[in-house]
Image: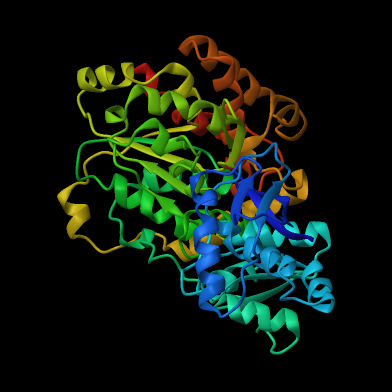
Length: 485
């Protein structure tokens, strides 16, 4: 007797098809073995499944039971295979009829089993639902605690179960499994309003430019000048995520076991974080802070105090919007489209020069905006608040984004390549002459040339200007002069 049940393999943030195949052969010595590159958690599933089946009052087959996880070329990790193994075992034990097997053929199963038969949460439920849509599977069956998150994916029925007994009764047609409803997404915390910031007109302008064009930003200034506060204002002025971005964020949240949020993420790792914690890694690759900040803001305070290896590991992800982790067993790709905001403290030029020397030129070249954040005069602290609130700035940013979408499709200014810049960032003659002189006088790199044009394109969009003029280049150049100190 043989049986095959559909489940999935979690590969990064994507799910791949997997089949749990079970065969029983006569043997005087009962034995169960798992093959197909299982890890320790999967091999231990035998004990959990047997105990859970017996706790539900169902028979476990006698003889030699062989469980194969196909395809065998991919390593299987974690306890998510408990439920599909249990269903396949019950099929070969003839607990489930032919009608039940036909109903199971149109389902994907995943879930960890407790010894009493209760189902526990698993990672990757959103990716599993995506896979079901791609494979044309009608339903997925998940533990009730994660089913609602998977129901964010449109096009598949997500059925929630509390115990193995619930799943068996559903397959037998004895009782239904409820269809999960999408959760009410949490806001993810309150954002600081730009109107609460006194003074700092240039940094507030730079924050607007960063949000409008998705430009990475570095703020330099003495402690207590509001660098962290300015960074925390960014999620409040960025446009809300579209449905596709929200689904990507939910997929990542389901992998790390955190609830999905409606707002864009804001991640602020401590400067003692390792490179693996920042970009991801480990024996079993896990997403790092840059992936957890996908479609949101990654804030690195005290930038020079981060390890050199962690900062250098950021270079490729910032350029490609993804992290590729290579291991002997294969490669894992995690999304990493982030708006990087960094801050550093030295105010004196000598101290600033020493700190900047700890940062590589290629890394600084990938940061479009270099902004001075000076000490705020006491008069400004005691005066009447005159700053533009985040709501108005958000409207300006949204208007600039709409212009970019009409002109460039889904490509934002901060990700324009040289060819796109030649097409969409046309400069006036005086603007072009100014940029030539600045690049030659300051000895800027070719990458800096393109990044100045990207920032100038965003400044023109904020001004509702079709072309780039001299004032746009002049302001964009101001954000590239940090290295001159």
